[in-house]
Image (cartoon, rainbow, N blue to C red):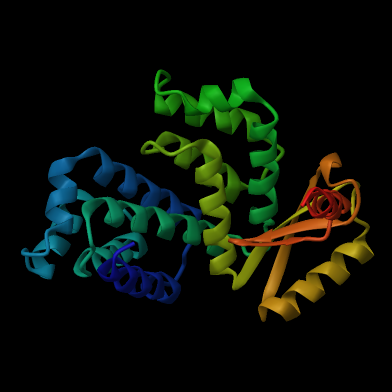
Length: 262
């Protein structure tokens, strides 16, 4: 991410936070805008052109997205008034705002947990991952498939996020899309996500103790996603971003074997 994009995204995120009445419809409109800009080189070029006056870029928003709500139009006008490092990063930025809007619209929904659960379903089902990730199928058909899969079992924000992302993958793998969405939602809610590999399910008390310990270590709220993984044998392996804390028996055995071999 370029420095210009970092500043533009920060300003755009603030504009979204300040917008009134952010709803799932707002998120849906922002997803639609991201897709429209992604699919039109002429539109993306016009909106990301640093040589064009900001007012001119905002006029393009009004002309193309005039049917959107005032809230969505206001956010998009802030987005295009900023300078982005590339047209691709402009699209990424609009998509991130759409995901954030979905999280704002339903603060009680366990969006990170549901996204994680769906990513595990995909990881365990090669045919489903292929169906959603193949370039052969239509993007709208993939979105409709996700909506059928999640019907009745997922919150409205998660259904919107996942179905929208598979409609506009832009050469990204499905699990990559879901992991990015989880990070964005966690960032919107002021917390980080820890992926915990354990040989057996954690009790509520164990989850609370682990979450509290990690929250102290990382100076902020930590949400846990637990993966049942018999290969760890005992103990836990925890990953937060690029940090890995491996206290599993399998890791200690591997270390012992290495020392004996050396």
